Image 1 (tube, helix red, strand yellow):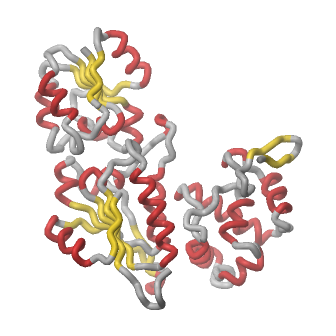
Image 2 (cartoon, rainbow over the protein chains, first blue to last red):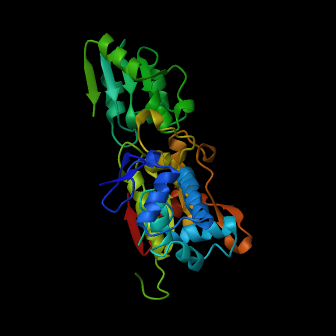
Length: 110
Length: 99
Length: 138
């Protein structure tokens, strides 16, 4: 499977996660978000960028519980809770935000 | 002869056997998990140090670096890269891989 | 997964060197997945498993994922009991200084950093095994 962005074809798996991390850029993120029915706001970008930094440091996409706790620590309790994150990413913050961030499906995503 | 060992000296007897039956003048190359045999201060380092008296011992640098042990290699062991690996194969009459 | 309040003691035993086989990475993945079930998790590194925790790994030259960074995430997953067989380290010419400094942050103490790694003797390991409800071997 693949998606078309700026005339380039980007390979994805059958669930729509892009296969090569290095393919990712902001245009691709916007396209992936559109397919998820999400209009990227500053708050969305904050979470997506956080995920990319987390992956860069630890080589894994965090489980949702870990993401929530880490966001709370970095961005404050008003953002570090599942209500806030599910409002941004209704079908699951770890799953949807990871896809938009160009990361593999989170380990331990249930 | 070039002897290649790719297993940890703590999980198989590959290195032990290789040290026992290799001849003076032989070259021993440690690759993959075999690189752990090159570490200083381990239970096998005395045996490896003894071999250095009459044999050449080399370690594949990329395998040592991957495992975080490149800086802990015994003095006297040569660190080689992939080109060096090829050179060793070309320079020796036979290759014995201790699986 | 479990009945309410039925927390079990899970021990993951890691006895293989990284990269040469897939066991080390598979174990990490299972630990991370299992962490979602909020059990009482401990990790034990013995035999060649102690090599998994060596710091300063650089896998660029062998074209494999450097998953050693992932051990630092274990604290985020509330996995903070990491036991290392001190005799296994010594036999291999290694000391605690050669290992990654793994920590976890205690949310109840204003995110104070605490050490995760505990060096244990073989007697202590014997006791650890007896305490467990479930043991996974890698």
